[in-house]
Length: 157
Image (cartoon, rainbow, N blue to C red; front, side, top):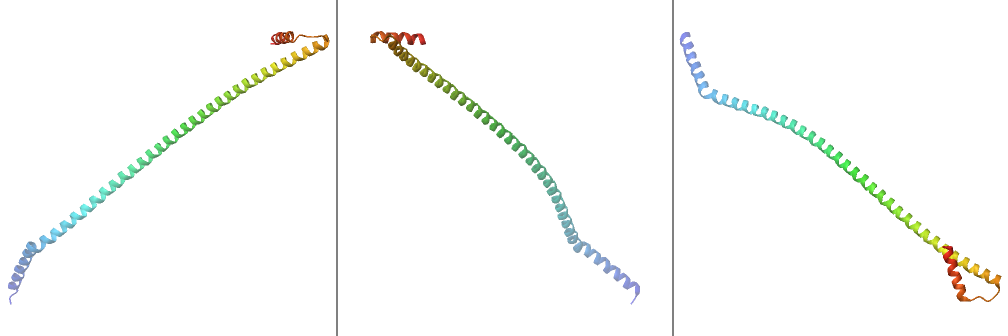
């Protein structure tokens, strides 16, 4: 066989194989590689999106925690104000009750003192009449006694 004919036959077979590969084998391989590249790109884009979503979620969580702390501080401050107000109201009520009790005690003491003075006046009048009767040792009119006692009471007031 001739070297040129073999070489030409090999070149023709090579070009036929190249044409067949380019026409029927290469497009599915390229399509599979393009699909895989697209999937990888989609995966990377999804990962970037997930990363940015995660960062936003973390920022939102931090903001929510800050708001919750502020809200808790506000609630605590409001509770402290309410407690102080209730304590102040209770102190005012207690002071009012103490004042009422003191006033009532003063009135009762004044009334008791007046009763004691009245009783003392009665006793002084009885003693005075008794002393006068002993001194005089004479007959005394009951009506005159009552009149004298009334006058004595008036003088003692």
